[in-house]
Image (cartoon, rainbow, N blue to C red; front, side):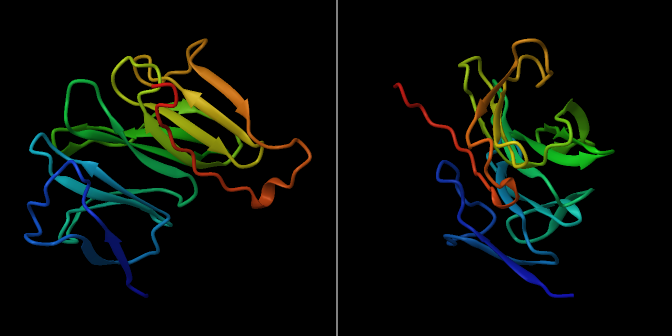
Length: 195
């Protein structure tokens, strides 16, 4: 089996305590990375790397040591989610399960990662990308989800755990109805457009 290389630069707001004098991290991984997500692991500001690959999600320390893994299909998306009032982040993992796409949160309690738990279901449309940002100003990150098959961009407000309560999900069409969705890929991002 081939060993692939993972290279990423540290988050600009955090130091790089585990790799002295280094401006980037470089280490071997066993499968090609589908998503590479640096995330704040604990209250000291330590940044680890979560990689979504064909085997699921693998968490690496900056030196390349495996520090956690979660088995599951490679399809889907992964992103880090900030929580209100704490420095460390959870991981939002969108993946297929029993014919539907689900959002599973890998909770992080100051460095201790929990078992992924399902908190939302998205139907059979493939989730191909996700981005996290505080979209409603309520503290903590909300999620933007992109579906490949139906050209939809879904905004899911956290509202106490990303539950799909009435009014928590908004759907915006981002492509033509007649277009060929088989080649559609989108990578949503969020920014403050109105200051």
